[in-house]
Image 1 (cartoon, rainbow, N blue to C red):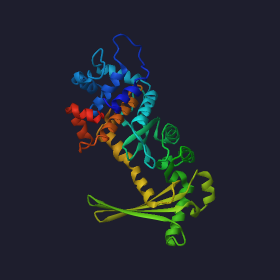
Image 2: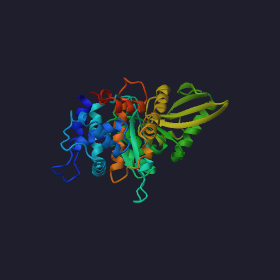
Image 3: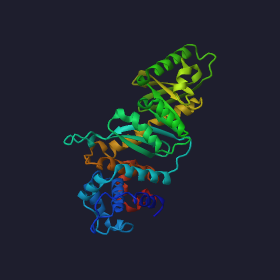
Image 4: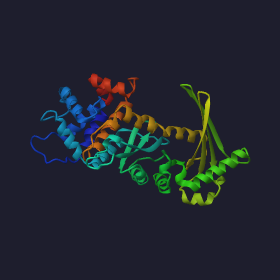
Length: 377
């Protein structure tokens, strides 16, 4: 087998087995690979993982040891609840760094998502909230970190940034992550940032708003600025987006803000006019950035931020039914969450079949040859 399946065996094999091993114990790496393949092919729980393994046992015996056959669903559930999610994530990180190339200039949105089904009222366990870093161009999850709740994204994002290879990339984060220490961490990793500014940075938001109000009122007279406009029409909806970028020198109180925000170069206004059924609404959004003044590049990056919602979070909810999943004992919810994302990346990076992710999952389940293609063999 080629690079990807070999690299899974290479990077996940050192994962510490949490069991007291016996002669009859199933090999941990066999269980991981069966689980990944099963989730690719449509499994949404441990019973389905077991049934898939049994149905494809002869196929798996072609490259796995399986000294005691295919584990039961109880064994899968117990073992994955005991595996350290942090060590599992570390193995995943090493695998990503070896197999997928992240080019400079790529947009990397960072955003969080709650797996609602992981809430366990009986044990007073809150639903897990994961913060994700997503490579927009490649369709790859670069890393994730768990928080106790959405508000803890502020402390989780710097920890996530520390484990990422983001040199030369553009990091986009919504208003929750618009924090000075986060901007500093991004710059120190030799990357650029575009951060949304809302009420949590009240003084900065007010200064940006007042600056653009004056600039537009005076038609940007004697100002060096950049602008870009795009129009989208689909399903009876028209949206016109106009992006304005002003150097930091024009910001009211610029010197104070520049001292606080590492490498702050520009302030940004995006005006979105949406017309649906003849009714038009207008929205103003503000951002700060360390990028050079280039409205088209910045506007494109802001739009790509939403790929984390459309390509990752939407797929997890709709295709992988994450919010309906009741796996929640110990580490199992977080580990199964990672299995879904590994499966999603395999499926997204297989381009010979032009259907959606659900169609690819079905095809992989029906056709072993296509599953091999998904695995990069």
